[in-house]
Length: 303
Image (cartoon, rainbow, N blue to C red):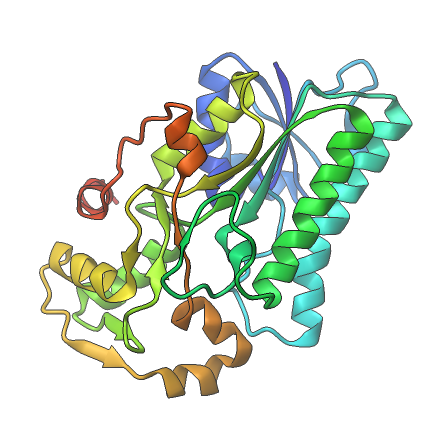
């Protein structure tokens, strides 16, 4: 299959690309800095700086749309919110317009989203059919991105898989990599009261889920890309501290986080208890359904 991926040099894309190449797919990655990103991806991957660099006789059978600036990379000013929105929605719209100009009709679009769609939902159990519990900025961002993906799929007749992704755990990337230095020094902390829910997924399961969405014609619609056993933040904190062989007694009250981060503090102090109901019903098998085993696997990997 000829695949076009956006966001391919990011955390998920770097793990996904070698798997797709190994499975015999022809992969093109759209990147603003192809030369800088070249060392991050397999040699067989073609990098392009513009959609127009893709030859007219080499159009994609599938699109994996993971583009988007990091939601937790900096404080949410008005300008930052606009950048987060534009990096997702405008990229998707640009893909749709490009496909229209080329007269291309890909078989499948796999588009990113996040469990932030549900908003800060307390302890409510959330499945793919659950409505947003709170229409905060995370919801607005995810909803706009999903709508842009639906419009692309409808316009070009593509099968659509929307992946509402939780916190992706990897050994050297993402949230876990940011936390590990502090935890290894014994400085990891419970955040607020620790009761907020954390829906997570091991990077290997995330990659397997995307491959399934790509290769299985029966896969379509919304999927919660999360492990079947979400945990509260206090539980995550204790588990990570234990894996690092540290006591895990530190606490950070909610107020300093709110003062330091403003609205973005909802990413740390809010949460969602999300379940992968449709994946389980369709027989998807998680290698790492339980947090302790996932952390043990990741922290045992060489640096």
